[in-house]
Length: 197
Image 1 (cartoon, rainbow, N blue to C red):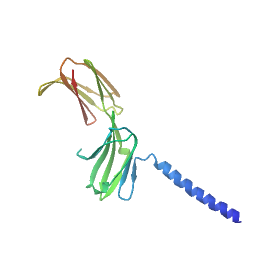
Image 2 (cartoon, one colour):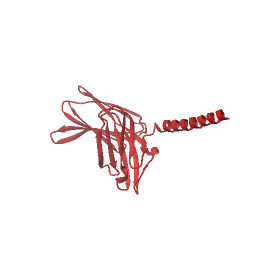
Image 3 (cartoon, helix red, strand yellow):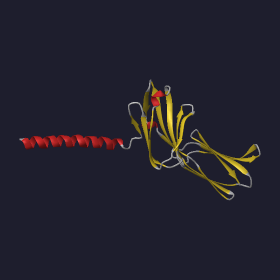
Image 4 (cartoon, rainbow, N blue to C red):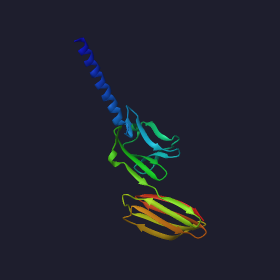
């Protein structure tokens, strides 16, 4: 009888331990971990130089930090002190921007994983007088590319194209000698690159 009780206690402890381990395992993929007052943001696959910002609904930057570690990044934020409203964490990587929106209401912070979005940035490469522009566009957002020639303080539009229903945008421009500005607008985001040829 004593042996049965001892084995039963061991079984109960083992079940409690496994439940705890499974709970932590399920939580390991979570980007947001909320504590008593602080919210810890956990970002995976970051590189040195990636930029983390917190912006309000008007796009005003409230916090900005260049990531100084490679791999995994964790930091606690007391978001309850923000005024009621909508905000977003943005992680800007080499070719993408990951957004994590959240709302503050009566000192309560709410994250909605379904509203998280990844924007793909264009890649612009110059090779002598050729400029290559590529952009991944999985959501088929309308994209406009404008190329301006810059002469002193004046700029003249040399090329403009509106691209629709295209997942992978690939363009090549042959530019003469001079200074140029390439503007790419996609999904309410604008990217600007200056070329000195």
